[in-house]
Length: 157
Image (cartoon, rainbow, N blue to C red):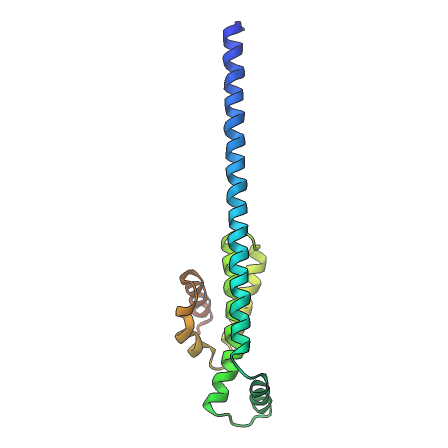
């Protein structure tokens, strides 16, 4: 090999190494950004859960739940309270899981477990009606995913 060609090959390999390093650094920056966004989203979900759980009386919920379990008739307000407590915090939790999954920070297996739990949640009385009125409070991609879960289950609104 002539000295000129050897020097060009070394320079080419050096440039490719620099380019590969820059791509790696870019990937690391994107990953750090995704983790930071996921952390903010997680904090938002925690705040929403705190707001949701502070917006009702635990005693009122426990009383209504005990009467429901005893087979007593409930007022519409009691029924709504039970559906709210058993739906809203969980859907906020599942929405956070969905967001983490979309970022690649939650495994497919973990997201599938959340989807199964959403299916079970949908079987509870009043949840589908609640979802029909509250789905706009969630991200579009999560709402579409939940709608698809309900449709596969045959429990659409």
